[in-house]
Image (cartoon, rainbow, N blue to C red):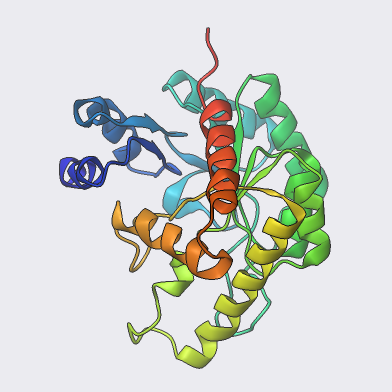
Length: 261
């Protein structure tokens, strides 16, 4: 199955993949195989979440900052290229604008990012909601994954920071027509995400493509092509948009690499 997905990336001409880790060692195996397909594959090995909060499906949990540091070192010792943290839950499809669970406190997020940076590791942050994204950006995360349900002030903060926003639009857009959720539920989420992307472009926030491949209805390889098309549909296809995205991609590739020992 891993080789099958890597082959799809190869056939589509995708030569760089940054994943979000998992709890079963699949990411680690994929990175070992990826060079056979001409792919530069970066992974955190597993994501790190606070116990009692969202994240066990993709990684390992901690209760104290000491335990977090131990997990971080474990990931680093296993060859992680960067660290992934989980600071909030998911979109609440039943309550527009709400995020499931309780977000981590600002001070906790700041300490988590500080520890990772002290270890020389970049930080990918699974984060949604106004409070969560603002806390992550203020903490200095290197990328914000998803960033659903945010507002203009939050996008301003993103634009004023060095954090790269990876909105993963297709995690919601690709649900249209599948029958899992009503269109009346999906449409407001999709419309808000499009509005926020336009603002991010206007404010010149750092933004990069990312599909959250493997999510429901988001296929490996094709998901990235879908994401690119979503950006073009929202912003219009132009040299400036492509240059903006190329800058975001370069920031991701330059930042999310394992530090030289």
